[in-house]
Length: 187
Image (cartoon, helix red, strand yellow):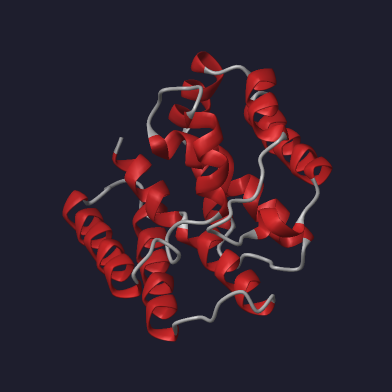
């Protein structure tokens, strides 16, 4: 379950890309101090995930505190919450499960959407490494239905209060990328 907390911390990878999208679409500016702080948290979280023989809970809690401090400093969840959480909310409206499990599904979908719109993610290999942890795939395939997940994600709409990649994609592209990720999980 500690890995779920690390996945939550890694959600900043897509949240920060969403922030770049916001900035490039003149919807909001970037606070460099907060952006760089969130980037450092991603780097440190990646190191914990890569060294998966020892999920250091003390380090993880320290990173969660740093993440919370950035949210307080910025005044909203923008640095740590973006399109991946919008998609996660749709799944969580139906399934009751650990939040990190749902982010395990939605972060790769958002990576694909962002890349499709010209916003590549530097640290996406860490999500490939997570695929080696059978706990997540087993949990999803045993407790969720692929067709229901696709149904939940097919009509996700942008939020009025949060500009993300979801604002600049089509529903058909979302459905296509969701199917790619879910086909990989349910293979």
